[in-house]
Image (tube, rainbow, N blue to C red; front, side, top):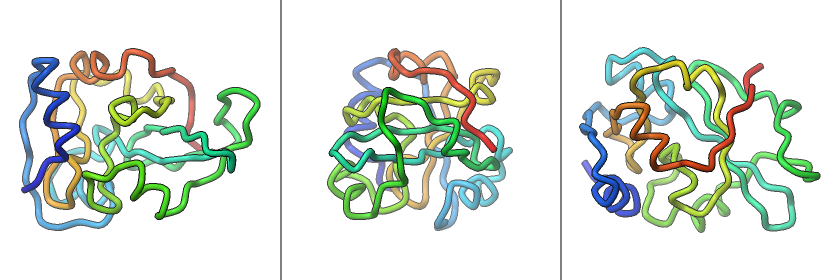
Length: 154
């Protein structure tokens, strides 16, 4: 189990309550939720977008939902899904496809779907393919105080 260093430092610095939840190796957030035995609606998945000009945005939504790109409104930019190369540069301490849903820790603006805001606790990737961070929603928002809430799901 290898938590991303950026994530671990931030959780400890902010004195957040959290626990690591181990699961067998998975390739997607939805599969992580299933293998960890948690409700997919409580698993926050991150989708990284870019505007083709070097600006990035993290959309965070429940793992059992799909992003509706037409609902993403953040400035005048037209957003698209980012490629794997960009993700490797942005999230250097994370394994490919295991990005924590805490974009502000990595300098990204964030949009969060309201379905996650109604929860008391949340799960998110820990930076590898075999562990999740489980934390109270209040602590999650302490780490991302500038995140905007807006409907993102299809």
